[in-house]
Length: 409
Ligand SMILES: *Cc1c(COP(=O)(O)O)cnc(C)c1O
Image (tube, rainbow, N blue to C red; front, side, top):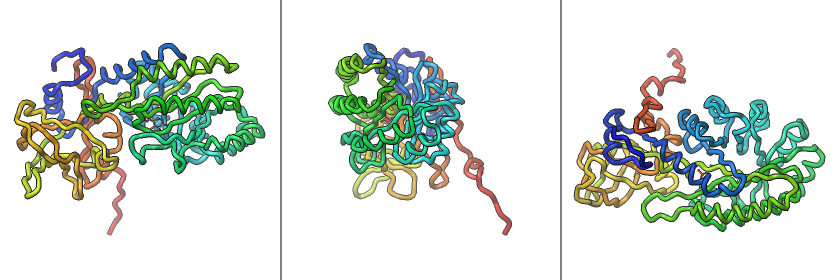
């Protein structure tokens, strides 16, 4: 494979990797992850800022280990993600646990592992306070009621959202904190995904600043994530440099007034891994109907659910015939129900057997895959320093049967 310093994998590189490991295959690019991490660090270099990778986007243990190696922390939403993070070598202090609707036992399990706890409802806050008082510091997830984000399914700050404790319940929080002597060292918000507007974050942080007056022991303010990345050329993105400049200014001004040193935290998921991922599939059949020309590929929404679930757009290219004549295709999967990756896409002429790539497949791609239709999950490959490493074997039929228990008839 050609050695490349670039943070983009070329069509010819993707073809080579796909030929070596077969299709369908998720291919990730370590250098691109690092580029994204460095962009964030650079944008916030003038304030005391830390980043925790929201690993629900992609949890392959090698991705977690790589994040740890470049100095990024980890944001987790289940006790298993916490355990994966520890197995990947993260110091528990560099792990945040931000679950939703878990019971107290899961919070206690995370506490015993020594990670940062983020509590997102009054009931657990009260139970935790009664049991542990101020012996273990916590962070509180607030809902600032900012409506933002690309899609209702991924917005979390609106009034109907199940996430966080409403800022209007601040008196109730105060009562619990005071009477149980809870030690609150962090405030958190996360208003959703795909927020391109810098002002949304600025409004959020202003609300968080107002809330700090109720909490004298704060050490960090966590603004979650939601940074938007481009899914095709010309797509709007969150302007990270502008965000860094404006938030740093607001944050540093505020931090001077607060009685203790404060850190600014973020939990980027998509921003770190989306563009670092490529999903390569094979065109099985070209099917001309009365209405359109379908390309049926050897994958489906069981491998990449975002288009069907979120109506998301993934750019699709034919990497076996990159200079062919462009034609209009509808790209569909092989699952036995409507399974469309993209309608009316302009793609260079597709022949049966050609390899197609879906871009931006790093975040919420493999991670949301399933074995629906008894199809096997794809392999995962990590390209680093110009070398391709298999980091997950393709499923086999034994994986489908692994946990099934046959009973006598
Ligand atoms: C999902 C999630 C994130 C990451 O969101 P992205 O849009 O992928 O950056 C961050 N924090 C929390 C609490 C989350 O649930």
